[in-house]
Amino acid sequence: MRSPLALLVGVLRDSPFAAMARKEFIQMRRDRLTVMMMVGLPAIQLALFGYAIRTEVRHLPTIVLDESRSSASRSLVDAMRNTGNFDVIGDAHSRDDIRARIEAGEARAAVIIPSDFANDLKRGKQPQAQVIVDAADPLASSAAINAAAAAARSIAGFRAPIDVRVRPWYNPALKSSTYIVPGLVGLLLSITLIVITSMAIVRERERGTLEQLVVTPIDKTSLMLGKIVPFALVGYVQMTVILVLGKLLFRIPLDGSLVLLYVLSAAFIVANLGLGLFVSTIAQTQAQAMQLSFMFMLPNILLSGYMFPREAMPAPAQWIGNLLPLTYYLKILRGILLRGAGFPRMWQEALVLVLFAAAVVSLSVRRFSKTIG
Image (cartoon, rainbow, N blue to C red; front, top):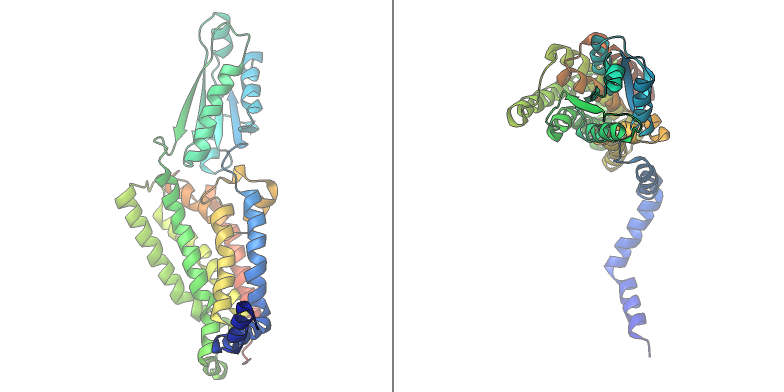
């Protein structure tokens, strides 16, 4: 007599369910790209992001304006450095130089030691120093504020305690929305434009309308640009909606030139549309296009600096983040909206985006072949 388990196996094997399951396994075996993405991508992303994502923020690029130039002032700078939260990258020449370098994103913090610092110590008077922190990122600035206070307490041998006053710039209330909402402009543009555009050529192929494109008297470049321009306009509409709602609902500061922001956003929008078109030239189905598109999403969210400060990431994760257009666009967004930075402070990021957009669109045009199959 057959066991209940053997009977159940026999029934399932002869059922329509078994036939359909076998068919799906055969189809899955033929679609190797999808299987590789389903199995390989989670493992790669787990290893990458588990290693890269850290919330403890250290090694903020810091400049020093030492007007005292004494052994006591050098002791304070050394104490700040020894906390591990401040990486001294150079000296500032003036307070205007401090503002310019923080606006440009070159430095995230500055230490100002006044000229009477050493004399106050000798007279037994409490000396003062100031630490300026770019508080646009509340997570990084909170760590820097606590570290500055700890550095002042760690210095021994002085007759009077040091009064280190921390001044947060750009986001004195340390509101997380001030940091997150401007970044949403870049994140949502990246997500929607890549996903929508990635299915452009694939949809044409699946619907059979690619044949009509093949016989039309239009070159590949014009075809690609024709697909990009309408979505670029949609991107600008999305950007406008987010900025307006951010101002009305979250009181996000708009300190810089919106005209400059819109002009520089063109390269970022085209770069993401080019990435979407590049994905569409690789994928054979809309499901593959969607999966490949989401392959870009997690790095964009986690490694670009949108959610986690890049200073807290290990060097390999920062290298990967340097390959993402969103990394540079976030610097432009926060530089213009929160710090009021102008084009002289943002031209390097803008140049990278222009080069990236040109490269990815050229690659997409080259990969696209006006043939069927």
